Length: 93
Image (cartoon, rainbow, N blue to C red; front, side, top):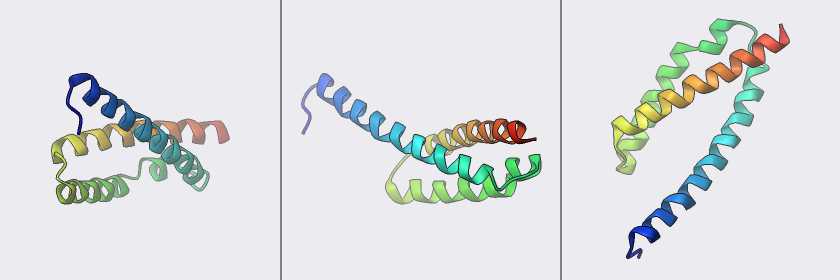
């Protein structure tokens, strides 16, 4: 068990490393998925975004995470990955 603020911060830093690794991994899959998309509508995919948001809210609830925080983090992450896909699409066409 961590007994100091420094120790807690170190544990949080360890989680950052894990999260960034997972974001990088997700980014690779986003780039792979982008290769299958040929239109802006396919990139934006609002129906898919809604499905993902509902899915992560459910997982957040089951995991005891703050649903609002999880939803907002995912919305921002999805927005940024959509922009990445747009750039990928633009480079191809």
